[in-house]
Length: 256
Image (spheres, rainbow, N blue to C red):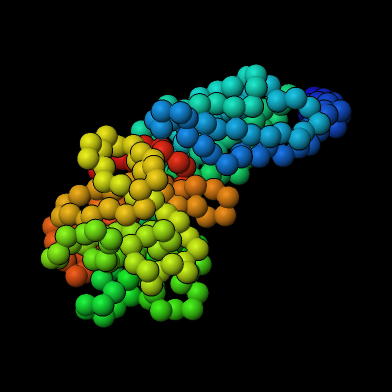
């Protein structure tokens, strides 16, 4: 009896192995493309490409490892959300799963104290680093014209006398001494901020006030980036500004 059991067990294992060997291997890569914002700025448009040997039966979308949607046709999905975080996809084809790369919508934060150029002495240029954080740089540096996105100044044509301070684009901006700069950035005050950073239009400078919010727009390469700048309770010859740079234009920024 024991010998018969061993023979049957061996036969079952052999049959299972043959079935497994006969399964078609699904080869391919599921690629999550760059994220974009929808028209209203309250959702994320997710798109992907699949180069597999078989068509995907479905794609499941995850945000911060929580499932938020499923698609059985097409290659896009719009997730209406006020949450930021990291997206990934899992595609299924004939029982096989394929996990994509990840993309993040989380704003990059930085806090920078910037000084008016002449008094007191100090760096007054704001540079966007490779990680999308703002840092300061002297306007006297040789490479400042290609790296400074904003600067802090009290020099604006037509400004009133007295301690009036501005955040300005270095090109087409306030002072003749900055005419050689090559970067144009835009800024306007967010008077009714509702959680979505709006496009600042064509304004190249704005007067800074205490406890105010400002929409910023600048271009890195061929892409536009948006940010929210928040001033503290004291604006003078130096000011600390909190920045949240959003790598998805107009996407809602949370917690303001």
